[in-house]
Image (cartoon, rainbow, N blue to C red; front, side):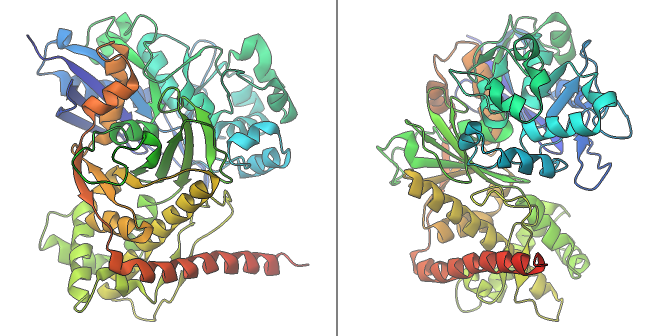
Length: 549
């Protein structure tokens, strides 16, 4: 009997990837294409949905070229929670002052709508309780309001369809306008079973979205992994070089796909504290440009400053809380590449490895090990401290106006100084995760194990420091492409080869490695965490002083 396959497609911040995955969760092939990012103004980031779909087609054709079309049973898409705008004829609408129609996607990390987000927060509307009490500029309501207030003629009046990028992809594949509960609940304030809150949209000045039963933002919804329409349309099948009718699963936000790709793995035999415990004892961390912290519960838990609870947003029938850090991989890159010794680092690293970002960090990790002649690498960070919110705080403080701090910089700018700054940055991100964990614990979560995936999970120092700082074991997936596994799970469910998402997760996600915390460093991180929290207090004090009249 011929092997059957599923295709997972992941649209990240800067690239589109695809994987061909077996029924057992083995990745057979992968492909990747970069996508364009434009910054027409400061804090405005836009992309092209046309280019993104074209790159999706390229990578899918690449990974499926060695198998028969009939062997591909299903396909699933995940993507960043970016906002796609189309007109009545489903053609792109410009989202910037320059009027370029092809640049019709407001990226997730676009913070142009900070002022609109603050105004929405100040309404204290009941829907805000499900987003931690604070509306983030990374969610869709403030972005929509910004478009109406700033581009009424060129964008708002022409727009007929507003899609989250994952839903745009599933529409492009199937022609179905049904939205995934993942996107609508997490980023649009939709709340099943009640649906849209008309009073909310009216109260913020977007009452025109109520027309035709909310047709512009989605009238029909379904759980992730549900079969959409009649599968691939003739046009989409031709674009992807697959058979028409191939099953397509309702999509996920990229971080949530990573959650599916790791959190449900069978952990028997690894002596983990979450063994014989429900999935609610696990947290999935999807670590890339930014980091998302996914925790699920059987009953709704409200965590101040943390998004959710969102029903069926990742695992059908379970409530999701989503914490996050807006800049993690991006922050590490910023700190390392902006240092005066970066050129020297490149030269040294190139002598040992082919010059890539991953190899540069491997060199830094090794350099720190050589510096730690009489103890743990972690202890090198005792006198240098970073507050990591250079792009604002997503969780648990939910304050996009916060900015980063570095305390303890010397006058020198040597390679050793760069390595220490890199270390302190990673430690600050791990302490930020601890802060999110503590907020979730106070609200009723009982997290006993971290499950990491994404690009930063390939950095051994990043992983170990997260284990040390949180005093929790970290599980890494057997397949490094856990986000793509999660997307493939959607296709497997849509094909009905698995009856539930939970069954598909357990069969297709597997443990690769367990990283235990170094218990001897517990007191060190307790002290460093106190310093970390004091940095925040000082920043608030500085802001208050500067705001005095």
